[in-house]
Length: 196
Length: 416
Ligand SMILES: Cc1cc2nc3c(=O)[nH]c(=O)nc-3n(C[C@H](O)[C@H](O)[C@H](O)COP(=O)(O)O)c2cc1C
Ligand code: SF4
Ligand code: FES
Image (cartoon, rainbow over all chains, first blue to last red):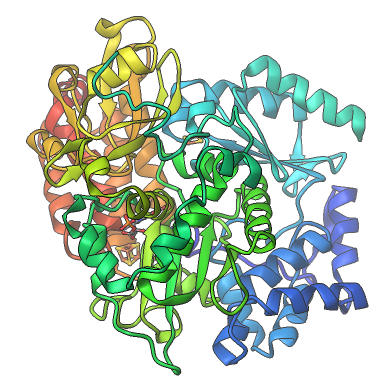
């Protein structure tokens, strides 16, 4: 359901009214015409080389390019960045948006520096993910426009992360943290806060 | 020792736990890549034919005989090359075996892919890894690079590429996976045509699970007699089970197919938290499979055919143990929410029906409604099951059906 009804954030929207300075500055940074650097273009060639050298093969680069664009920019996919990907593959923007909105790993809104993704599915639930989630939320504090006021954290509840035997699992950006509990979750946030 | 335990020598995945060296040196020390050349010298079709009686059934969930599936592949042409695609999307809640194969025993998969490509006359294999498996994909890429360096993989003759998913359970369905690999939304295709005729880029394609491909490679090397000593007719071989939840030693473990569930839980995984009497229910093969009661768990045999006796199935062999300390209704509602979140939205019965099932179950659990509403919910699930493009919708209603069929008093209690 959720993947059928997602919204795309339009940079031209009224983000200027946001009370979260970090959100605001991320939105401002997203309002630019993106370009690949020389190094980035070289990397894109290595992506292309994995697929057949024809129209169909070129389309296959869409998911890898969206991942790459998101990683290289600010951890999310503003419309103008999707436009860059569209231009790179020579595909209409709407096709790129159609795909980007389907996959939950593509962030269509800015996220905090640390994206905490908590699995709350069955195995994690049995081993205490509920307490982990509550503890993370308490320690992170108020969320405004999808992230904490200091711009450090976004918390998302996610589906099974495929590490059920080490549950409960929390994913921090790309890394998994295993066998979490209320205390370890609290310490995790404190450590990240100290790191800044 | 249990007769279902598998010796180190016989294990397909000798480094599932990650205690040993995962790299090519370590793998070769354990007998990896030996006799590979011998297999590659044989005629592909002869290998497939010789493997047909092996009783090997796909480890991705549906349990289709793998050698038969391989025999559907036509000869490649210049315009239409054959492809082997490895399904490492692993998203079924309760399942985490492929992850440990990718990060701890990646060369078993690489060698399986080389043998698979030879049998299917494919020059290219794609490994579709779920996007969240970052370090696992890095490890797998390192293994691939090592295999090129050692000359087991040769550019233009047998190439393996990794393609990362991006967070969508439905991309585990094989045709959705192909759509996703082609750069589209992961929406399953209407079948027929099946991938063997019209797969990746419209070319003949076989999609197999990580474990399946790795095991087929080893069977091709070690032979049928070795493989069929494990399990029984139509259910031969060893199998990796993921055992999680209310269990003392949660783990992935490779044992013989046909292991009794109670033995798996009590002897191999340290037992139910709080003892066997504290058992409330077991999900035997990933979230889509129907619950087993403690009485059923007492006698259940873990293979593709035996679990039918309890109206359930082996699925992905992701066993989730639920004890009396947990709220079973909340867990099942959470699973229902998962399916509501993951529907791809193509078929009306699934897109509209699955959220409906979720809402109705939620109402019942909150004590709203009457006893008759329980039967209405069951009827609703029957209107969804079997009426959609892919098996997702079936897998979404089975857990609810299983809950109501076997744990109805829990719901009735709420409605009093
Ligand atoms: C909704 C859905 C999700 C699936 N997810 C996976 C998965 O994550 N991994 C997998 O190997 N098979 C999955 N499958 C099964 C595949 O469609 C396919 O049957 C399997 O990859 C074939 O491999 P096998 O013959 O080796 O089992 C899924 C099927 C459905 C309907
Ligand atoms: S059954 Fe559901 S998931 Fe499968 S194709 Fe139809 S809408 Fe998509
Ligand atoms: S249920 Fe949480 S990782 Fe599988």
